[in-house]
Each structure stands twice: as structure tokens, then as C-alpha cells.
Length: 429
Image (cartoon, rainbow, N blue to C red; front, side):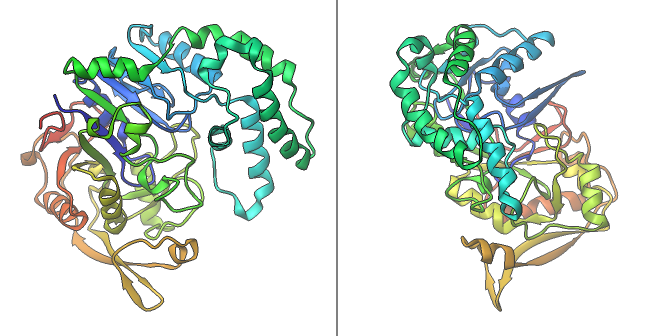
């Protein structure tokens, strides 16, 4: 059977939650393969609204949900999120949930460092969520991380704590902070360890068993390609690789397992936090997009910056991630505009570019080249077939797929799971 990898093809917040939820209801396993609890997914199922930031979206439907080794895990947030979902009637147990035992932990000292750095950065702020994700990834690649499997061996943690504290104590001293309280940290870890360890296992092994049985696996990405630490708008990026290829390394399955790559794309563009944004609209139109799209971050509540659809960025994202087809979301937000615009290229120092440059100064200096189209007066909200869409809305969709050189696989027309126009089923080869 076909597997599916879902990624965001812009700066995150594209509406992945609804699409992943819709696909998860037809999958046998859902895997988170990167990021931390800085990723926000809102799921609307009937009258119930679920807000997830760490758990895979499949958990709501009872689908086997796995946190892969590519994720950095805050064990205290995990416990809080599980308890909240259980309070909403979601059943979570070792039958339907597992955590990679080689997953690195986010510790209180990571949150401390994240906040201290941002506070001291002034105009150089990255705009992190302050949840310790970046510092946790730094310790992972610095070979001083404490991992889930270490929770079963806390009495033998001295040498790892020596490496960890040697690094963090020096940084904390630079910010005028006291050294890490090792005894307090160990006490906190001993308290949370039994809760986390009940779900811990070599998930690569479980996933291989699932795959050999012919099950459908859904790989769930967080953030978006434009926030990828290699391919995004560096340094205003997240701390992990968000491209589709990470599904292999972040889950323990090989690259041939990722299957159909579905890029989630909003019908306009948004961004949270700092960084360049060529099509940003700091006017009444941008305000209208934000209000109609309810553009506030699921995790942080921060207001999102809004602008016209940028075909250059999405085409680049699709090429880098090998996107097979896109899911176009929030088309209804454009209902009622007399005209709509699409960015088709950039001007930079007198030259026309058909790609987004790598250097931060060039990224900030590009000027968008727009193509203007007639808008539509009818509504697209809740449409479930092409026949339900205004003719101009269909023309807009067709122009988008032409410009990004990637076909539309489905169109989402509301947060409701069933309000979806299916063009190509990602789970069918």
C-alpha cells in the first residue's frame, strides 16, 4: 500500500492539521518525524476542537501514533498534552501511542537558554517560541543530549551531566545566571521518567513490522519548508530539517518508505515571527486576510503576518521536497475580493529572479512581481466538488498549479474534515 508524507510548503500554519486528520482516518500509523512542541495543529471533528502541538494528529482517531527519533521531546509538556486530550475523551495507551527511545529530551535548562538568548538579541531576534527546541537540537548534535532511553538509567547519568553542564554552565555564566542545579534536574527527571518510559521503544522496529504487514503509514511534518534549517529563510528558520526527506531519518525507515509527498499550501501567504516576507501586506488587505483567516498561532497565539500567494516560494519548496501534489487550503478566505494577486517573480537590483536567493540581505531586498486576476463574488466555503466552486476560483486554482509546476491533489474549503475536494487520492499509487 502507498504511504504519504505531509509537509508544509510555506512558513508553516498552512492548515496541515485538518489534512493530516483527514488522512489519518484512513492510515494505519501516523509518525511525527521532526520538530518539537513548537508545532501547532488544530483539528475540528464534529463539535470537538483539539489543539495539538506534540502528539501526532492520528491520536484523535485512535490510529497508531508515533513520535520518531527526529523529534525533540519535552516530557512535561507531553504529560500535560496527553492529560488534556484524555480529558476530552481521547484514549491514549501503549496500543496506539509510542515514543522513540532514542529521542532527545528538552530540559528546563533548554527553555532557560532559549529565553535568555532571545531577550539579549535585541533587533536580532529570531522569533522563537521560547520552548527550548533550538538549544535541545544543539545538544543533540553536540553529543551531550539526555535521551528518552537515559530515563531508565538515571543513576548512571553523571558523565552525561558533566558534559551537559560544562556547556550550559558557561553559557549561563555569560548571562549572569547561576549554574545548572543538577540535583533538582535529576529529581525532576526521576519524577517524570515512569510516565514517559511506558511509551518508549525502538519505534524503527515497530514501524518496520507495520510496513511489512502492508499498512498505510502517514508521516506528519511540522512547520514548513521555508523554515527548514538548510533550505529556509536562514537565520529566521526552525532548528530542524522540515523537508520530506527527513521523514526517513527522523523515523528510522528508509527513503523509499516516504511515498506520496503532499505539500500543504495556503491560498495566500502567512508568516509568524521575524524574517523576510516578499508579499507581506501591511494595509487593509493584509488585515482583511488575517481577520477572515483567523490568523493566530495555535501554539503561541501570535498574530500572523499576511500577504498574497507567492508562487516563486512554493515552486521552490515543491522542488526541494519532491512534492507529488499539493493540498490547497483556506481558499474561502479569498472569497469576495474584486481582484487577487499572485507573485510570479522578483526584482533584485535591476535583475528578474525566478527563485528566492539564499542571502538574508537579498531576501529582504527582493520586490515581488505580481500577476493580477479577477476575483469571485460567490462562496467557496464548504465546497465538496468542482461544481460547487465559482468559475474564477477554479481559474485561480489552475493558475496556481501552473505557476508552482505541481498539480493540486485536493482543495480544502473549511476546517471541517469532509469539506474537501479530492482530485487525486494520496494513498492510491
